[in-house]
Structure formats: structure tokens, C-alpha cells
Length: 324
Image (cartoon, rainbow, N blue to C red; front, top):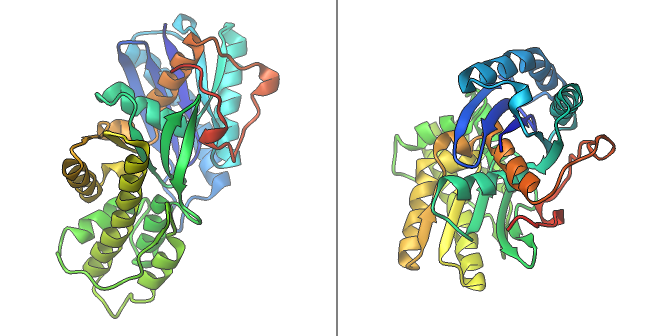
């Protein structure tokens, strides 16, 4: 079965085509703000402007037509409402025009499923860290349970905010990583862990207040060390609680080499396995949406037009899982 997937939750418009064995194409275009963070309306306008180009591009790369698809999947939530609207409108239009099923999927669960598809992980405890979400999840009794999560802003968002204050462009995560690699020095900051949860707003503000008094590279390195240590500690607690021997790191921030190093070291100490999707599948992309749509379609799910409205606050633990 071949499925076309549409990702449009935030600044990335991604289109991908997959079947059970192959990723035929996976293309994207990112909205890059001239200043500040993501402006939802401008990001949505970007997606509308590039949608037809990306759809044509993915068909050419795959050597397939929309008519060859068994379904079209789209990110139904969570995400920025204006951006979600774009993906939903495109998906509905393709579904109606070509008479193929529609599958609305949860963006967070798509990050997990592409992780298990592209690695040897089978039933891991997942650390999902991105610009809009930061959660630890485990599959139990027909649902992905959120064992720990951010109490305020997501870690990726915190990195973006800090980078903007340091006068670096969006997205900020790669810029902070480059700065951090310039030094091994750190300063004392507050430790952002709250039991099984974490909190990054205060840590971000505390770090920003030291701009000008401490060099940018030391601030970046210190922020990374404290923030990443907190999420890895919470991940380790979750693995101990669940008796898990597998950890999956996924989401856009999962591309960070220091975070991967911390997860690997923690797993080595626990005699557990650490898994990381290839970078192109960590960031938001259409292939992960297509894959999630594929496994849900095979499990008998599809989405009617009346049920296809966006779900900006759709939590992964609200989804009844019948494909595992």
C-alpha cells in the first residue's frame, strides 16, 4: 500500500510517499522568519504558496501519481491552527478529487512510529523532544502514556528563544549546538527537573539574564548541559519505572549530538539500547505522516471529511492505538 503524507504543524511543509518497505520521496520547504519566531499566519501563507510545487516534486521523485496512492494522510494535530488548516485543506482536496481515503494522524505518534520504522527499536521508552513538544512516552494497555513532559515551553522552543536573544537566526537549536561545541566550560544554572516532568521557561530566562556578562558559547554550553541532563534523567527514571531496555530519541532536537551522547551513555550504564532515527526523519517531515497513515489504514482506520477538522491541542495519550 502506498500513502502520501502531508506535514504542516508549524514552520515546515513536508510531503512524503511511502509503502511498507520503501520511502519513495520525502521533500520539504521551511518557513524562515525574517526576525523573531514563527508567525502562524505567515507560516501558513508560506505553506499555501509552496504546496503545489512540493506535491509535483514528490510525484516526480517517486515516479508515481496521486492516483497510485491508497490514501492521503495529514497531520491533524497538535500544532499551530493556521498551519494545520493548510495540510487539512490539501489532504481533503486530494482525497475528494482522486477518490482515495483520508487519514488524519497525530503528529507526536508519527515521530515515534518513524523512529521504530527506521531503527531496530520495538517497544521503547521514547524521549520526544521538538520545538512544540517535549514528552516521555511508553506504550501500555492500548495507548501511549505520557510519563513525563514539559510544564511550560518545549525544549526546542526554549533553544529558539535563547538563540534569538543571542541574535542568531531561527531555528535556534543548531546555532546553540555550534556555540556549545566551542567550549567545555559551564556556569551554574537552575536544574529544570520537576519529578518526572521538566520546566524550561525559568532556565531560559535565567540564561538570557547573563547575556553580556558571560560569553555566548559558555551560555549555550551551560544551557545544553542543564536542559539535556534533566530530560535524560527523567528518561532514565521512566525506563526504570517501566522496566524498559530500549530508549528511542526522536523529534527535531534529537539531531543534537550532545543529547544523543547523553542518552547513549545513560543506556550503556543501564545495559540498555539507545536508538536514533536518521536526521531527516527526526525533523518534521512528510514521510513520517505517510507511514503513520499507512499503519493506521492497515489497521482499518480512515477519516471522514466531517471528522477531519484540525486538533491543535491533540495529545498523543488521547489516541486509542489499534495498530500495535
